[in-house]
Length: 267
Image 1 (spheres, rainbow, N blue to C red):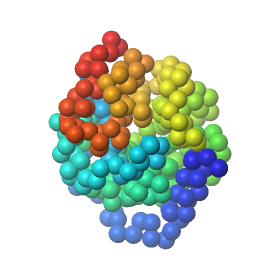
Image 2: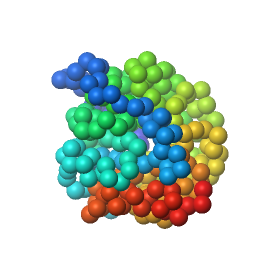
Image 3: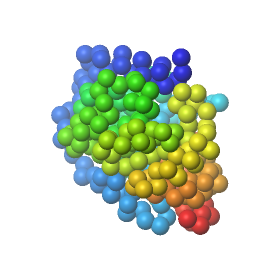
């Protein structure tokens, strides 16, 4: 059983619990927040940086990450020129939580992406109630038959709750097979979610095929300006940076080194 199938099985157990939404407020954002799509578009020439708050990185050789509160994490990242944040809501394997997403959303006026293995509309309710601006949907969950609620229906449900949709791909074949999903943004993950291996050649091919889908993001695998430059040269509008930010001694300086011009991209 691959990592993705394990995550789907474990996530279904978590979200089916009667207390999954317990203690969450009704959707009534107290902080005015731009949409994530708008924030990416407004980044312009330097390119957008989305910074991810997570506690564990299962694909890493050292999965545990330095521990910060959401406030501390945002305060350390802000000087780097951040367009928005991503936060892991997934409890299995990642040790994330709905509370983490709520705390990040409360710590910033920038848009926050609710990142989970979304398999059930109740997770869309959770995203809206914790103050997220957008939700991640994973194309592979549909193309490999893991979903009982189609991605197109989940996307409509997200929009009905005031959430934008970031649709994630890995392989080129996923593009045509999810063409009916009304996504606001598109992203290509370098990591194969079954094996957790980084596959930059596969991602480069998928990015080339996805060039007309905008805004387009590069997801995962950025720990240096060289890796950021690979994404910029592929024509993305923004990149998502995860574990390397938490590990950086000076997150602001690290993030500034990843912007398009600082990374030496000619794109």
